[in-house]
Length: 277
Ligand code: C2E
Ligand code: CA
Ligand code: CA
Ligand code: CA
Image (cartoon, rainbow, N blue to C red; front, top):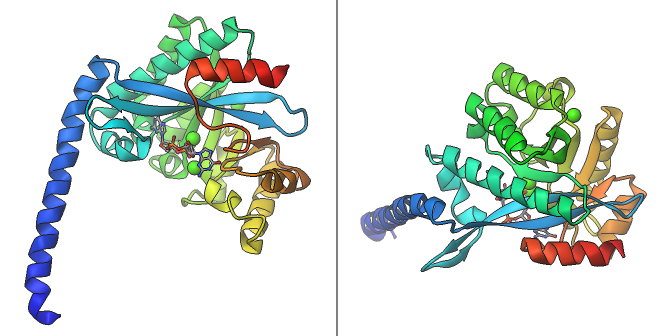
């Protein structure tokens, strides 16, 4: 083994090299993608358990790449987040999401549109200005959207983040803490920041009907959130058994393949009409 060690390392290096070259290429192509409208949003509904009503729709980005086909956000969002492109990228997502929100309004659906922001967006004043400007441009108001932030995002620079979130909160924008339980947000942050929703990460929800530890984590998170006056959204709800258990635990809202997969806007609208019927 030792004899091959050197070779192993150089092969490994070369592989990471091509890997990063490929990433650079993707990043370069993304500038073009933004100009040419290759980014598209899919939408996944969120259901309130108590009433069965759709209480929100989350916008999830996809890249319709001319050569590589449909790319999931996991394949390019981390690259974008590590570069300056995050700013035009987020602006493009905001514009598409707000346009979709307008369309839902015209179809008679008033539920808010949830958007994912990255940590980099939150340390930038322009982002909140963009949100405000685009809300006005689309004749929408704060309560028409929910901003989803991860735990890593809110622990970045706590005073600046708190100011940005307060500013959004004052306009009635909903605030959700995404992937709850996977990061390192302190309970002090939960108490201090004007968060409306905690989204329990799908990794805890997926096996909660068979894994007792996961069930305990979910149940405790629901209690914690409710005691702090926040609503709970469980993501990654894949079957009826999980939904039933979440209902028993007092969870407010569910999202996941059991209800619906993320889908293009036209499909979502058809789905919403059927669901409401
Ligand atoms: P997220 O915000 O936690 O989004 C939930 C992810 O879980 C989505 O993956 C969704 O398609 C998937 N999902 C929904 N229901 C189920 C289920 O029942 N089972 C399973 N296994 N998965 C389910 P997606 O669309 O691939 O997005 C991945 C991540 O990319 C998102 O995680 C979010 O962090 C990020 N992302 C997506 N759109 C944007 C965006 O516009 N901006 C930013 N900054 N990040 C985004
Ligand atoms: Ca999210
Ligand atoms: Ca609020
Ligand atoms: Ca998640």
